[in-house]
Image (cartoon, helix red, strand yellow):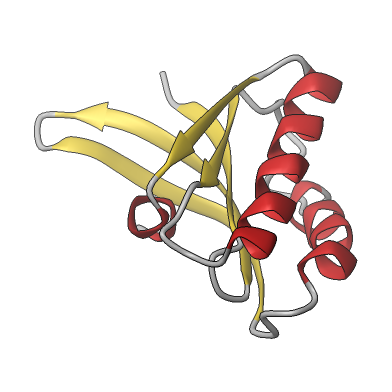
Length: 109
């Protein structure tokens, strides 16, 4: 069964996506259900909440709850990372799901 995750990367701009991760013979296949992006590297705190509402409110995501949140841990400037990590942690606490930190290139992938 697929695991539904939200990925938050705030290492440069901000990128969020909700995907179903399905293990298979080659590793893991991701089916992206919803995504949002903004490129301004100075507006993480202002944009992450609205972007999160957008991706979680997408019709393709509404059929079942999240299983986990993934947040980028760097390398990147600390201020942007802090906004993404705090958003992931708050989401994890609010929904009761696990939160995992991953290197920024893995969060984007």
